[in-house]
Length: 341
Image (cartoon, rainbow, N blue to C red):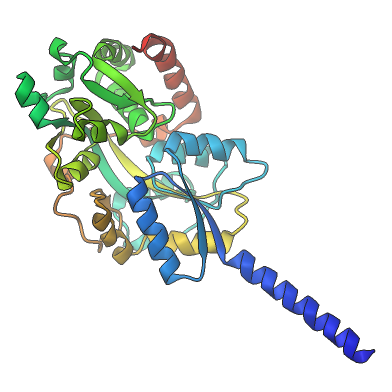
């Protein structure tokens, strides 16, 4: 009888321990960067930790919508990468969790400020300027003039030759919308986008898709973050990247732990690991040429440098505000998206 009781207790203890190991050994991740770096990050993390990563690749806008919809019953532990505005918006709506990583002191000022401005509910992991990439062979064959400024994209000969993502799904396109508003003023920016619409052949779901289409010769030009254009050049495609002459905005790719994360300890392990210099130095191996947030990380030689670009003082707080974002997107839907080709 005593042996039976002892066996039962041992079995129960073993089952409990096994359940704990299984729970401690998983992480539910949403990655909002390019799928190649997402896969590399997952692989590197799993090699270094006894943790299985269940990863989904979604754009920033899609991720924000998902975690908002699942707020009462979160299915995601951590959100890595993607433009900072939706991360800031999620933080302001209390969808993400405050976490002060021990790695904070190693980060660039812009990455730490991203954390401080949100009450440490998100942090910067990389940065990159907005611009475009164009197919040099198409431009040469068709005799198009190289577009150096935002105004040049309105040239009549570029009708149907430009792609940009939809700002409702893409953080890249929302950054473009918010940047143009800050450069021109809201009414003028909407008027510009209405005129640009005549030259846009497609509003894609993903922010990097337009320049990938340009690389394949399916369109002449894609409005994207410049590092995405550089990545296509590094792959051997005839793509040249451009920083707009009037000035441009930039992203702070961010990372957030979801409030109510089921695997919170593992989320913190990923968070600290993703901020390490050796991890960020590996991003270039996946043809990701952003500026890393850790001051000791290797900056890819191909990365567009901020000092070479006319950057605006991008207002992350204002354009990451839920009410402002909602109003801008509604106006874009009404005045631009509704009349899209």
